[in-house]
Amino acid sequence: MTLYGVIIPTYNEVENVQILCELIKDVFTDMNLHYQIIFVDDGSPDGTANLLEELKQKYPIFLIKRFKKLGIGSAYKLAIETVPNLDFIIIMDSDLSHNPGDIKNFIRKQKQTNCDLVYGTRYNGGTSVNWPFTRRLLSRIANNLSQIVLGVDITDFTNSFRLYRGTMLRALLPIINSTGFSFQMETIYIASEEGFRIEEVPVVFHERIRGKSKIGSTEIFLFIKQLLSLPMKRLSS
Image (cartoon, rainbow, N blue to C red; front, side):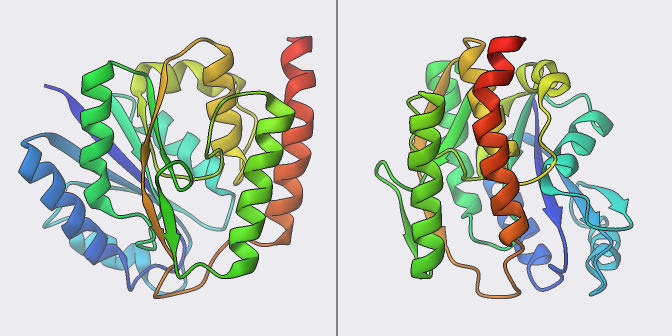
């Protein structure tokens, strides 16, 4: 039995998680696949974790509770280590900016190509909707800079909507240092350098309707710092 795990970090997403669970359920029910939703909640004061406890009665939820914000990358790592039996791991945002319906395209692409990683791209056939100009510009700069510095043919380094082969991601985890937003960039770069097969599917990114964005200036600084250090770390390893 192939088991898919959907890892979703949360912070103050009480307005979104029930809708998200229902949409994910629809995807896997339609495809007749086994799945689990792993939420990592960083001490949300709005009651997100309490609602997820209630939703366990209706959905296959595994809830990991933390007491403060420790970074999205560390949330992914903790979930992967805590639930080690997943054949395929999907990561996505909790704010409905990623359409759960696109998971079908990720799974189909992986089955067609037998690849190890499928990432969603907002640029090569994909797009973004209602995204503020400043965030659109920052995303474009981050991705263009990543292509130049890392020299890898990836069109979207920063989108956190992906499917990984579980064995690959668990093997890479010990050498991934990022605990924040740069986890996406570092993971796909190392996977490419290690010779794993990577494919992409176009996705539409929707600016969140409810709640507030969690990406601030600190995350941007840490992303740039990690980006510039990666090539040297690989050369010295």
